[in-house]
Image 1 (cartoon, rainbow, N blue to C red):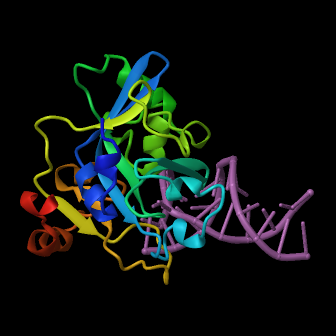
Image 2 (tube, chains in turn blue, brown, orange; image 1 turned 90 degrees about the vertical axis):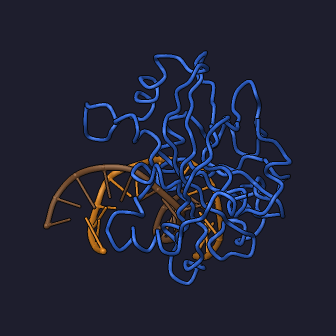
Length: 226
DNA sequence: CCAAAGATGCGCT
DNA sequence: GCGCATCTTTGGG
């Protein structure tokens, strides 16, 4: 289980290193699980961060020790962050893909599909798109503000772990999504595991120019990640 | 008390 | 890329 020592580092470092890690949430008696493929870093003095708006009771989680869960509700849905080193700094977990291994059960995907049904459709949401967005991820894993905001990870109910044998080969670094003009929107604090770019919030490799841009300047080699 | 704002998602052009 | 539904929290009157 990732703990204080993992999260008590710079937000950008933690954001990159969370790629490939696996979230596990117990729902009734069943473990739900997703591998993180997209994250964003936010700093206290970064005009787009919630922390930059100042301390309030609601934002307390951002000012708590590294590794504290910070959740908020906006646009009709929940989003999940983890506080990192330095008061007010945090990493937003933006998307993942369902992760299946010995610790998961055969009904997991079906349960996640029921938790996160496709809007205006009776078709189930395709497996790899169940967690393609910060609010969709929370919905598929049954993560709610009421239950988890300002809480610590708990190895019996909700934690993040390192999986042996997987480190992203390539990480895409781009500008964060949905940041209004004048709010430090130029900062490139969004990170995507290139291998799973098709399943993140918005595929940064959608067109040829973007792919070239990625290969030319935005590839981070594994040794640069850590 | 209520209007308005969101670190969004979806569907249509 | 753009408009619109979404719904809790916030802060001003």
